[in-house]
Image (cartoon, rainbow, N blue to C red):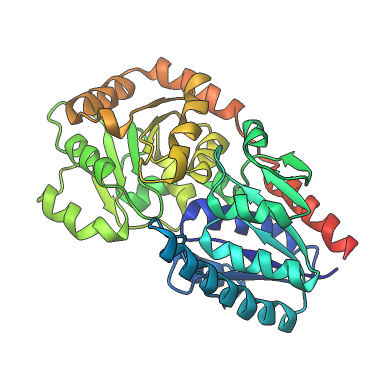
Length: 362
């Protein structure tokens, strides 16, 4: 078996699916390494999971005019050239890209070295890096069937779902309640804004924590960036409320939750379905092609969750939805069943199988 390089990142929605696939692949290959941005999430998480981490450079695609795009082109060529040397040094046979601008140099460099290329698209609407990389990849892995109509590629497109770490299923509510200082028997709403946090979600979490009508616990994963601001805004933390900057063991948070209020990156939604939880979803509007709302609508249409969109944001209305959902056990139970039915627990294995096929071909 050959050497596999994972590449992509910036957010948990890219990093965690890559690592879920990598965890299986490294049981089958002598080496699996991670190529990513030294200043982003992957640089911390991948080494903590036992992966050799290789820092690569990549320009972000400009939003401006022609001159910015010309500069981008030259910087991308430079990034491809430098990454090419790294791939040859590490004797990489297959590169798996999971999106994010940092994934483009490794996939495109692999094209020049003859290494095999495979990408995974976690969202309904593919990102710019994956749209580009799909043109030189031998296999395209998808989370959603609908994405097939949005990629212009001759490569096979295989729907596998979004890979999640199976450890996400190992949470224990009794142990989690001790960790957070909660009652195991009292309902809990979990607020999680993804690896970067989210302003409006934090606003709703604070309002919920301070709600005089609240009869349930609040676990608020606010994001490291917003931790100090949230603590200042909430003042004295009310009883039954726990504020956490970042949670490395999401299995504990999910085990404690009866409802999840969340951003809607595909990785987060994949985890919610895997553990079978109902959700109130707040898609980020600051993403390419509004792909988070597209992701969320897929769960809403099957009754697994509700969607609140930023362009119609009203804090009072959002708070009322939390109240209603937390007061209706049967409604949440029905949403939880629908959520569990959407789970693809074999996604990481299916993806690793496709990677292995390319390793064998190399």
